[in-house]
Amino acid sequence: MARRSDLRAIPGFRALTLLCLFVLYAPLIVVTIYSFNASASITSWEGLSLRWYWDVFTGPESGKFKTAAANSFLIAISAATISTTIATLAATGMIRTGRFRARSLSFGLISLPLMVPEIVTAVATLIFFNAIALERGLLSILIAHVVFCIPFAYLPISARMQGIGPAYEEAALDLYATKRQTFTRILLPLMAPGIVSGYLLAFIVSLDDFIITNFVKGAGVETLPTAIFGAVKRGIQPNIMAISTLLLGLSILLVTLSWLVSKSDTTK
Amino acid sequence: MAAGAVGGSSASSTYREARGWLLLPAWSVLLFFSLAPVIMMLVYSFLTKEHRGGVIWEFSLAAYDQFFLDRGLFGDEPPRIQWTYIAIFWRSIWQAGAATLMSLAVGFPTAYFIATRPAKARPLWVFLITIPYWVNLLIRTVSMKFLLREQGPLNDFLLWTGAIDSPLQIVNTNLAVQLGLFYSYLPFMVLPIYAAVERYDFALSEAAADLYASKWTTLRRILLPAVKPGVVAGCILVFVPSLGSFLAPDLLGGARNFMIGSLIEEQFKGNAGNWPFGAAASMILLTLVLLLLLAFARQQARAERRS
Picture 1: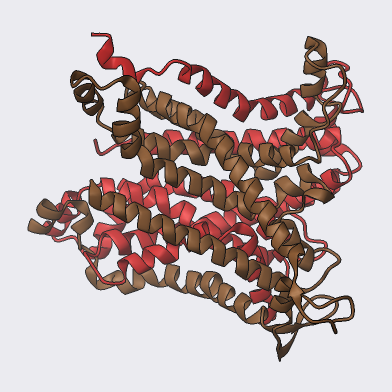
Picture 2 (picture 1 turned 30 degrees about the horizontal axis):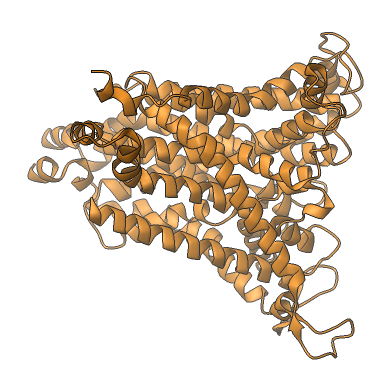
């Protein structure tokens, strides 16, 4: 009967969904297209060209962008590695050690960076570094990034761990494997997709952060987002669109990888 | 083992003895670099300001006094309520609220549409919605500015179609900020609503239809109450980051559309250089957000009990 399925298909909702996707993607597509513009002005279109990509790598500002990119990647790799390690251990402690009283408190602490508005975290971290007299530079940026990367790494890792039944580890223990062997040889390999997914998300979140980095970076230390922000403040230039396109392409690539990895489930 | 069979995987306790060691790194990093900074910020909001940034370790209520009270230009008049900063907070609430409503108007139908697709197609739709979230917020905001600007592609297109005669001035208006926030956090609206609608059992609406309820009645009395927690979660997830956002008002709003985020930023990065005042404004923002989250948690708990 047609009437039964009435509520499942509400007229106009498909159109609104397409509108939603259009809104989400249109600005990104427009910037990508204009990054291939041959013109030196951002308003007129003068045909396709890789001129501005060339400019990003060899132009007068290329040195600044290269240093910023090196900083960004160094911090993102370190922050993702540290936070993923911490998150993997924490997920094991939360999900593989039975019930305990401090569990919801621990979960609250892990998700704290997600609940506090970013600008507040930025202010609090800057003040804290000032109070403990930690010099502002790459190290201060790294510490701040590790903190907000932890919940992003934790979520896919814990989701994956909840999906793995205890039977595999129990079998290993029954066969006289030690706890340590069970952890490294059974649980960790099973966890690999969750860990990779968490690592990639932490990497993207670190690479993308502007607000907190802007507060805790020292004078003269730039990451890609802070360098881009500084340039945009003087007006949107075509080379900024090229660098933005590279960065957004990288983010989309990594998040797609993360999605594919977490989707591949070897235990089912 | 019985534990695994009864309580599912969450009751597994293989590494019980190592629990402390496993949780120690997370606890120490987060206590030291996430919780302690917030406490230190509270302390700084009660200190005396140093003129070029930083603080003098001397107790003072000056920051909160400056926020709430107006004592005249020379500070010797009887205190009246200072509306300047309250107005900035109020504008932020208003802007974040408008962005939330816009997200709800587009996000609810989207979530609903996706949740009613065949089960196999849903993950791909959800993925398409989440991709833009992972793109750098700065780049997305810059893209929005590029699109909306006076000589930008949107105006070019509208002029070309003849819908308008002269370019629309969108950048540097409240609308631009709202659009920027809407664009920044739209995926946050879609995901929780999607989760709620996906859990909804459509047999309930069929039962209602069999009992001669109209489509509208079924929607209003059966479906909406069932998905309300998801809608509330979506609104919170859009409203909270919008409230304290910095990039959208800074890049799209211009000087007249100042929001909390810019007010705070100016105390530390800009010319104002008043750390205790910035800390106090941050504390007030944090208090607002935590109150909202608390109300939200209670609402979710109530909804849980009812079902």
